[in-house]
Length: 325
Image: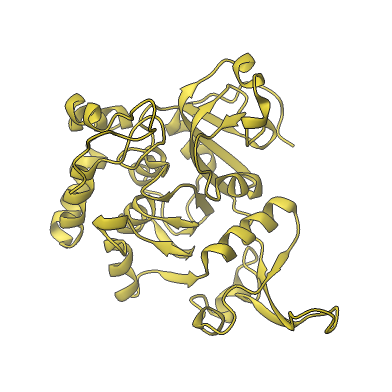
């Protein structure tokens, strides 16, 4: 259990303290929603490498970490950025060029794996993926698994129902728990101790947060402790899981953060074009990440007009009349 106290530090300090070369890292969010992008950019700035990355169904965060050469192994259900890249571009390119190892699970399986980690149990059973290549094809070899104590010996295991034939389920797939060294999530509201309130869909963020040995939280609003005591049933992550809390408005940009801002279609469309070309992409990394020393610097380079364009409508929770083409 984490100690009860003030966990507010800078993003630079949080990444330096908890995210190390070769560590097992999980990032929250879903496709182009609530990716912890400020933290992703800081990991790239600090030139952290050989990450074993876990994600549920992520887009921009995974693609930029992979594109920057920070990832060695990836376990994921889906990597895509919606209409801008149905399959993430640098992610796909790295797989085609055999620069990373990718282990493929179903969406439900990844959720169960994080859930098992959060429960402190080694696996959970499911029927998901039975009869598919997910069961047959491994991205991380048995030999590699045996060399790494953080990895289970098997991708998954098929078993006969141990309770006999009293129900229709004859076979099950056991999926191993994920217990990352670090999980990073971006939320709408958090307090100084790390209590979190996520607005809208939570995806697998709650399970990812609770499964991790260390949890870094970035948030849109830094809220007084007493505020989150009102309607406590709306708080999904208690302080006992948190190690670091960082207040970073637009910390998910250019992805969306429900009720605060939408995704930036201009940025994501331009990125998709740049990501297809190696030279342009390396220039993008240099100019947009290394030369912007903080997330605030990056936002300044984007400009206030663009941020106003994606500002969320109070009633809808996303931007009204946003040109998404």
